[in-house]
Image 1 (cartoon, one colour):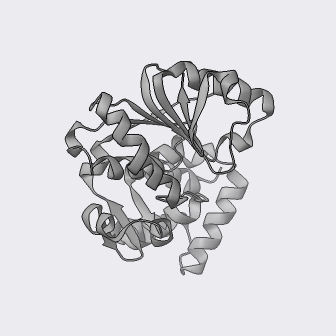
Image 2: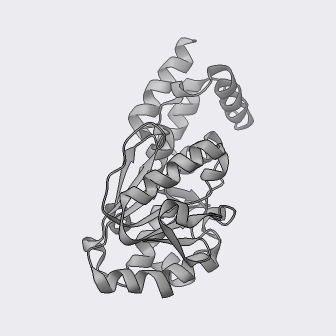
Length: 257
């Protein structure tokens, strides 16, 4: 590894928590070299120097570095069902509900949950656990900086209330950030916490084998309280919910029996 790149890796880790050495070196180096050359820099050193004074350059680097397909309020209709139908029932039973956003990627999902919950509860009494296996996406989530395209579905009032525009990017407010705790966690290999009222795991299970899915549905079911809700993505309908002790509460929402 060249000294220039090595130094760059160290500085980026200090600045953002993101560890570039976890990515395939040749590919990442190629991607970043073409990025800085396009901007007119000749070395990683110059590029980093410019990044440390120019916020927009740093944000563009973050955006290019991870392929981010996640969005706030992705499949908006389902979030409406959560807000209008699912949450009121859960909060009726217990205002301090325990929530887990599993495989949370770069944080859009748990932050969306916090925003929706803020319609019911003061933010300081909301606490959401968000986990992912990838340390780099967790570091990105904690930074809370997103390109404009991630916010397409965010209701206007939420955008005004909880985001600050910075060039083409948006920063999530500290109040929303404080409502979410991020941790590294491997769904397949590690045990789950228990007694959750709501578990959200969307657009992830499609990547697992049938065997792994089967195991995960069992683990998620065991992690929920009776009457707790499991919320899955729009391509992830469970065809035999009773097999995992679930009843269908609504499309893509399952209630633990």
